[in-house]
Length: 490
Image (cartoon, rainbow, N blue to C red; front, side):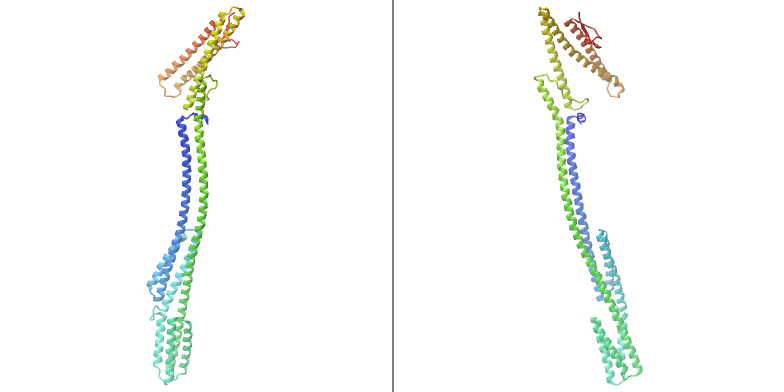
């Protein structure tokens, strides 16, 4: 991590830190927006399904009401336009049910049942229309027309009877009563009049059988009474069929209404349940968003503190080292990373070099002072023992100074080797350095070598003149192999 941080400049670190914090909070904002979008989509879906259910339910009820109105209009007036209206509204109701079926599983089941009931209603209405067609849309058609003609023939035949007056008048009165009860039934549709008609019809037939009329007239009248009874009962059966079909249609219509109402109740229940679930989900998401926001804040603070500390901590070390350099020569140095691009690392490198230079200068100055004092004592000493101690002190001072000079020389030599190595690899490295840059590097390497040679020569001459030792390259003053050795003069 430290090596990676050293590859970045201060501005890049600050920009990276702010960028990370911004990205974290952008992530929080995006997450919050996505959660809000999901919640909004849930509510939109809920209201879309509920609203669609409500709309289709109202549409089905409206179509069903129109069908009932058209049915009533047909039963009242037997208008074929009312039949066409029932057919059109039934098709519209089926379309509403198909739309309801596309919403969800519950609506699909309800729509399937509504469709089946609507189809049953239409089938029965067609049967009612057909029954009225058989019965006759008016008094002159169908069974009504045939029954009317039979009744008129019976009345005409009864009016043309010849014979004794009282029995014949009794037959006419019976037929008039028969027609009266017939009309009461046709107007009111009550079953009691059917029984009355049957009773009057039987009594009239008995009167005909006993009446003092000609056999031909009796037979004709008996046939007309039988035809009247047959046609009347055919009308009754057709009315009963129409009544049964109408009642079945009413049952189907009521079941459709109940299904629509139950579908609305189910929709309301589901809406309440889904609303509660979404409210709980929203509360959970709100808590999660709060935790995420808190975590993002902590993470952002952590990055800010970490990046700030990586900038401030080296600066404090640099300030501390500078403060100590005012009054002392500290030994510690600021840690640096090789090849770093950080400005603070560059300042640390420069400060380390400055501290090294100060330490070298102070040590040289101390060595020079120690050497001067020892040389003064050596010249001023009169006794042999004092002179020997002064000579030993001078030798130690010169050795310390020589060690520092040789250390500097070794560092210069190492840097010279590095520069020479870089210069040797420049032509093969594919860099864009110019020939002038390469030439300057070569000159710098040669100059460093020259300085190293001068330091070696000066260190040998200095040691020989100060201590009376002769320097011999290749010999070590510690007895080991080296290129900087000297031995004492005998």
